[in-house]
Image 1 (cartoon, rainbow over the protein chains, first blue to last red):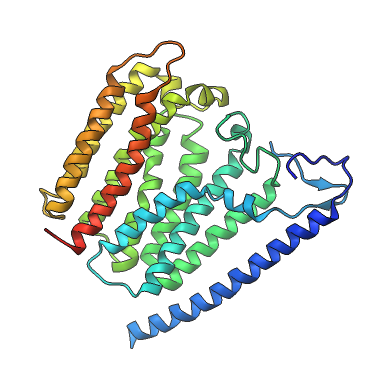
Image 2: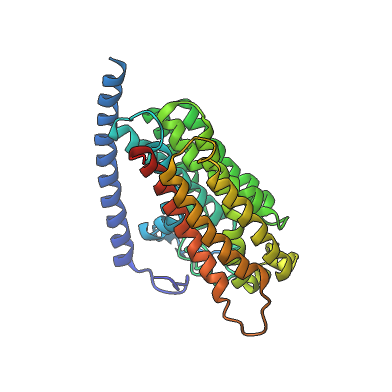
Length: 49
Length: 303
């Protein structure tokens, strides 16, 4: 999808594909960060206790 | 400049692969490795999850710097063969998306560093991002052939940040590792600039071979290689590292200087394949990887 121009018909399938792949990636990253932040908190509690 | 991806009223969302490419993943690998070595060489054992998070924060900070660099230089990148295929000059990404991504990633990397380690490492990470974007990319690079000499400091921060993330303070060894990368940058980049000279000239970037000519650049590569070799070996006689690192540094630096002598003393004609320059460039990357690996190995398993 590199050389698209405004004159080309809008590719809805590509729009949905990109939207879906970004949403999936964002969900995985947020899930990963939640887990990471949980373990950071536990590690910090152990250091300061 | 980048073309818009707008189709009438609707814009295509950026592909995540283009956003990833914006972070300069190959440069990031060296940043991550040197930062990890700085952290592992520190005298304090950090819990693995905090070590991982600190390195992740440094990687994200480096990615943010790369993204903001590509956002600012999209016009220049379009003029160079080596960079014309990047997401912005190729028109696959909208500049505003790149800017928002870069700023957001920078802010998140600082937040993560502050949460996982300490304010000292966060401050250093912030300084390195700001230095790379404002001092190197915006100020030095388009103005002076000394751009990568001074700008090299930005790439030298990771081992220092890794160490400070572990200890909360600065010590002589990480400062020496900072100096090592700082002195390594000119011969590394000028070797690249020698065989990419026409690209830099086309983009109007005042790299040393474009401004001062090949002969002067070759002399300066040799000059910096010798100083860098001294800087690389120095931690051993000064007592900050042991013999394992010391001998590795001596052997690897001797080869580095030999390759630099080859590059520094030769003259080229039309159609030269620039093999010694390409060899020096490739070797310089392996040199830094092995030397930093030796710092950690020396700390963990001293001879």
